[in-house]
Image 1 (cartoon, helix red, strand yellow):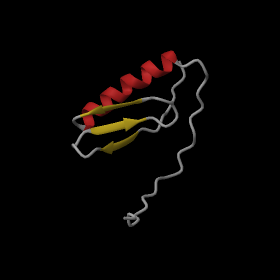
Image 2: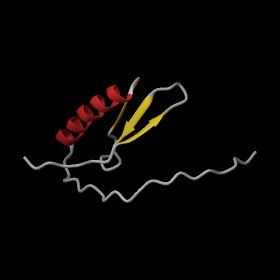
Image 3: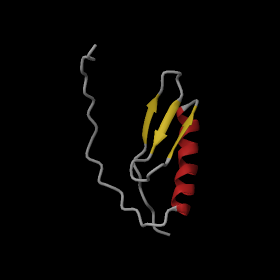
Image 4: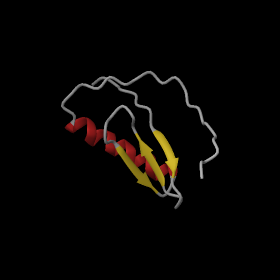
Length: 74
């Protein structure tokens, strides 16, 4: 079986819950109370998503992340 590598984005919501998303797989996301928990759950989510995916996925090449800070309009 060929190994695939997917980028996982992890964010933390206002309640402190970690949310993990896989941009290369539509609808593939999960959440957990800790980083360890969310990483275990996203691994399982990727497996489920890949099993149900009908099209072959070609992951994009990761280039980088940028954070932009802006003033909110009132």
